[in-house]
Image 1: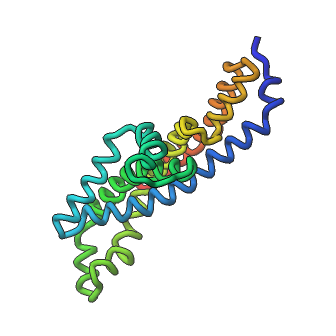
Image 2: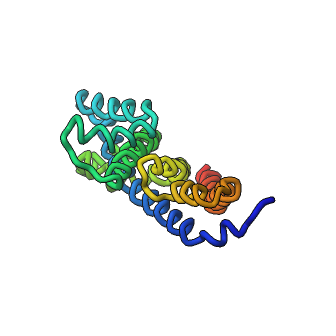
Image 3: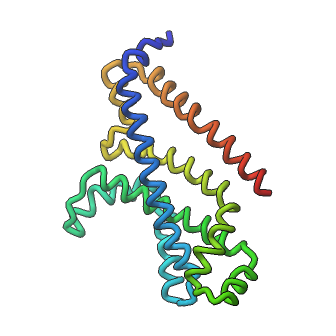
Length: 215
């Protein structure tokens, strides 16, 4: 029989796990956006070496599973690079770089979709390419990029569930811990699923509304 008391008795652990999940989502999304913008601009650079470097970054991180990056960041960096890294730093590093590869493609496509005449007009006004990008191109392109950026942010939150493999006490890790002493995995993981539905269903709905508004 389904026993909801398992959930009510451990709400503090689940609540703490949710806060950890949200914290990592916010941090890695912000870092991913910043790094992704740099990579997107690198791919649009007139310099071939910069374009290739940006392309390699995207291919490198998009084609290796996130789980591998998490384990490699935490266990392999100290071995191969001699870098001592905490599990928190490893989680942020792997998630941010992985997310940046996807954000970069969204940002690059959004910038390229903008009318090239905007850049020509900025140049006619005496702006440098960098000034034109930040003052003219990015503000206009960003409106079109909001829906896919929102979608990728939702995916990023779901990706945080992998943090449990390096013992970061996120929502899934706490669920596993509760299951280990209550022996009630069905109730615990059902609660986790409900929590994600409560957060992500409205988020998906908002992303779709934004997409329709921009069409």
